[in-house]
Structure formats: C-alpha cells, structure tokens
Amino acid sequence: MSNLAFTLIIFSAVMHAIWNMLVKRSRHKTVFIWWMFVIASILFTASLPLFPEEFHLPGSHTLLMIAIGSVSFVLYHLLNGRAYHTGDLSVIYPLSQTSMVWVPIWGMAILGERLSLRGITGILLVILGTFSVQMQRLSLVELARPFRDLKSTSVRAALAAGFIYSIGSIAEKTGVRHYPPLYFTYFLTLTMLLLMTLNLSRTKYRSAIAEEWRVNWRPILCSGPVVMASFLTFRYGLNLARVGYAVPVRQVSIMVGVLIGILFLQESYGRTRLLSATIIVAGAVLIRFG
Picture 1 (cartoon, helix red, strand yellow):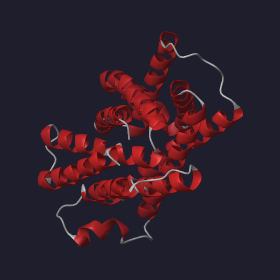
Picture 2 (spheres, rainbow, N blue to C red):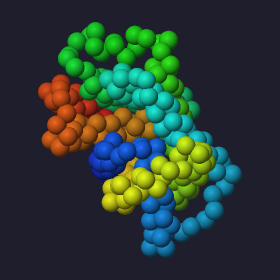
Picture 3 (cartoon, rainbow, N blue to C red):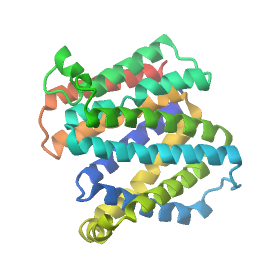
Picture 4 (cartoon, helix red, strand yellow):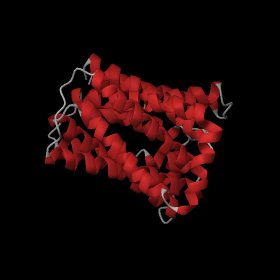
C-alpha cells in the first residue's frame, strides 16, 4: 500500500471515529445520522464548483455500483440498530465488523486482487484486535463469546450487517475504478440520504426530527464536514489500494475510539482495549508494508 493511500485511509479512520462519537452522544441516533447526511449533502453540493475535477454524469455501471453501495450501507446501519436493540455491545460490535473477513475474499475472487503473506497476517491481527476490543478480560472463552448463540436474532442481524457491508465495499471499489471518487462519493451520499429520508418519513420519527435538531444542532453542524471528509478520503484511498487492505486499515478508527472513550468518556476496561487497539495498529502497519 502506498504512503498516500495509507495516509488517506488513516485520516478517514480518525474522522470516522469522531463522527461515531458524535452519534453515540446523540438522543435519537437514526435521526442524528439523517441530519448529519443532510448537512454533509448541503456542504458537498456547495463545494462542488470549487473542485477542479471535471464533472460528467455517471454511466449505467457506475449508477448500479452507487445503488448497491448505498442500499448496502443503509441496510448495515438498520441491521446494526436492530442488533443493538436486544444485544450486548460486546457481542454485537465485533460481529458487525466481520466484513473484514469477507472483503479480502471478494477482492481476490471478484476483483482479482492478490495479498501478500505479510498483508494477510496484518488483516488477521486487525480482526483479532477488533474482536478483543470489547472483551472484559483476555481469554479464548471471551473471544468466542460473540458466536455462542447463533440462534439469537441480534447475533444473526449483526452477522448480516457485516456481510452486507462487505458487498457495499466491493461495489465502492468497482465504482471508483471507473468514475472519479469525488463524484462517486457525492452521488453515494445523496442516494443514502434519500433512502434514510424514506425511512424517517414514518410517523414515529416526525417529532424526533425537530427535537434532535433543537437539542443537538451544534454537534449536527460539526458532524457534516467530518463525515464528508471521512467519506471522501476513504474513497480516494480505496482507489489507490486493494480493497482487501483498505477496509481492515480503516479499523484504526477503533484505536481512536478507544482513546476517546478512555480519555473523555471515562469508559472501563482501558487496559484490555488499549492492548486490542495496539494489535489493530500493528496489523495496519503490516498491511502498509504488505
């Protein structure tokens, strides 16, 4: 992975961790994410004339990739929300990140990517760190805990979320191969906003939309530029790197999230999570030189 691709994806990971922290501190998380995409879309649209990249309408293949990506990522958020509704964070979070298992497989099978032994080792370290970050203690029993109850609705929803996210990642990689990442990200953002708006048009969300803005308008305004920066830098990095490497490297956001949780939110199990974050960083370094 080149220095530029690695830097772009690491920056995207930091931005990803920041907007996730803002979502975590919101009242109505689904509504907050919708507002975040509203602000990002407005900012994106206003900024387009400032970019030197020539605009041209996407072709049918690009439109298909945008549709697959946006549907996949919206479903990922919905399935994650359903899983968290009844499941524990320490079980659901690592299962929803199992996209890292699927993405390298799709990359090799569909896109013809080849991964080095060093890169594969790095991916395995990132997966290990991701699964151990929510453990209360380091043990094989704790590591296997998320998979114990495969009959659980929340467990199945989390596994489905990880699988669907991997499909969206492959669609993104295919899309930015044949269309500028800037405009691919723009149309992806607008399509995701449209799908979220359809979901929020239901009666139960109507009062929550105004309430979330009234209570959290400052974090909402901050989150728009952050999510825009996260989306753009990741897709430019994705265009320069193998998707099987890019998705695991972005898990460095977990390290940033752990530090935010320990330093600012006074979350527990700091030593275990710091060790897990260190394993993720070690994996990312191996991928960088893989």
